[in-house]
Length: 339
Ligand code: SF4
Ligand code: SF4
Image 1 (spheres, rainbow, N blue to C red):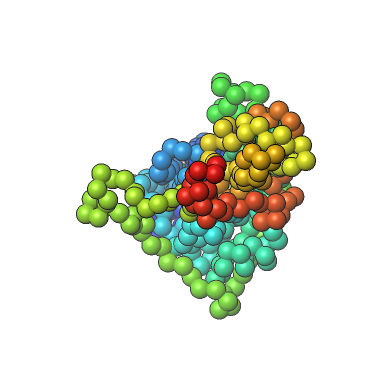
Image 2 (spheres, rainbow, N blue to C red):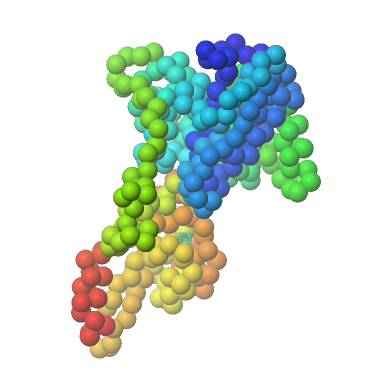
């Protein structure tokens, strides 16, 4: 039963995620379970930019008592609950904006609730944490199932059994082999989420919702719609696309064949040019993890075992990252004759 609603009579949820983590499916399952198993009215829809894996995605869910119809389908700007599917989003997106003063924020992280509150800079409300990446890897499910379990626990008014039923119905036709692991992930998220309420203590300030405005429109877009700035990919950051795994470079095994370079869609590998026996030679220096989205294609292609699959949080990414030195590339370019 709904005990908290806004002035319009709705309980509102916003899932903050990136393409590929399954927030859209999680939102659908949650809304359906609310209708089927908890006697509520519900509405769900998602918004995303390009369909590319790794771009920001928001999924919105509104619940209302059975006797009240839901007549609006605009984005949720003052959510009662926000669930953040990837902690790397916190630094790049205003994920908690508009959250109600007594709202709930659920973060996928291995941090404690106190650490998470500081990380989120949350003024007040309930902080809940669940290590969804670890659980998903352990039980071989997706992050969305673990987050769904944590959300159901924190909501308190959606029956876990009805969510299980909807999961079975959703996957039984196309992916029946995933049902058992999805249910295990759901239950683990439900059982392992931890939470704590924080009173307002002046440490952090509330973040109002601000409508996103694009910096370029029809009035100021560059001619032909092309962004002409040199090397605009320097600012690209693919770290939010990774879901727990990274390729790890074992330099001693590398034979500098270049297969990883031609396979990687994001130019992650850093190369240096040396002179060997009077001839120039390119050698692989490793990965610049800023650009790596964790697809692991390079691990599959490497013929020498010089790239192996690793769990991201077991490494200090800054330490193992080989940074592109764009000045050197510039020099090589100018110095073309000697290449
Ligand atoms: S594919 Fe493997 S051996 Fe070849 S350059 Fe890349 S890391 Fe080295
Ligand atoms: S996992 Fe490998 S192929 Fe995929 S983006 Fe990262 S470096 Fe490139």
